[in-house]
Length: 261
Image (tube, rainbow, N blue to C red; front, side, top):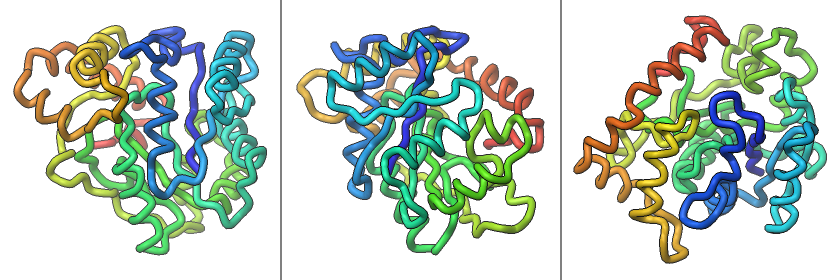
């Protein structure tokens, strides 16, 4: 099961999840791409009970997407309740992605599932515990429903509830078997931003989807990356946004917890 966090109330770019890319809302691309992962039996949008997310729920219902609504601030609670609502007992494996990553890659998700299963781990991701060589925006975490339940029952820190998985990857009590960071293969290994937090990120995505988004087929991320290699002027549009993002992470999680690379 893949659970996609998505809400309309983003502080830097409100309403971004329903902004149009190639004629479809950004969240449409996220759900369709995530659901294309071979190891995913279903994809669920976990949104909030805030009034602005009435639009998110309506969008999901119109498109036949599974949706669950929960706390705007306690995202761990929202995530756990979404999993329970849609049938995730302790035997189910979960993948976490976010609704502001319109190029989330089904093959990358499957790589995380494979690493999780092959290693017999409780948690693996593209971003932790070590440095990441994936583009920002292909981030994925895979973990057991049983591990999520332990986090739900035992997490006490505010950032553990805001960011869902810190209780898992910090593993303070050595409760979990944490896998090494999933390494991006050469065709994916880049330091580009393929997520949407700022207007500059949206500008980059609009250019990518204008170039690759027509025709109804899933956009190939390696093809996009090769194109960006040839167009550094596009990469430059949102390059400075990554520093802002890392500074925000550091403030929220603490410097030792925010070192993604």
